[in-house]
Amino acid sequence: MASPLATTKQSINLTPSGVPGSRIRRNPPSPEKKTLIPDRNERDRRTVAIGIALSALLLVVILAGFASYSGWSPREVTAHL
Image (cartoon, rainbow, N blue to C red; front, top):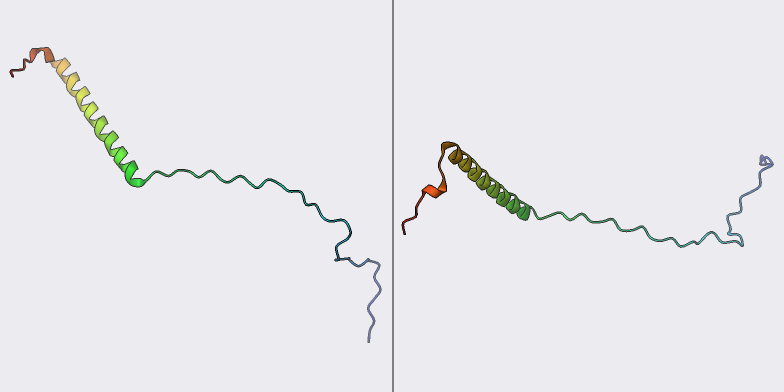
């Protein structure tokens, strides 16, 4: 049988030596901030309410502008109760 060749490298010692590894305690990573996702129904209700309010405001502005252009004033109206 053939004998293994002699090497010049030293063998690796896998047993722990007398000096332990670093045991520095570090702060844990901070938790990620959770993004608050609003409820879809709540968001839809809010969007519809804003849309209705803006549409009503736009209608009032258009009517007031047209009335002002045509010379009509609310002071001309008398309420009979």
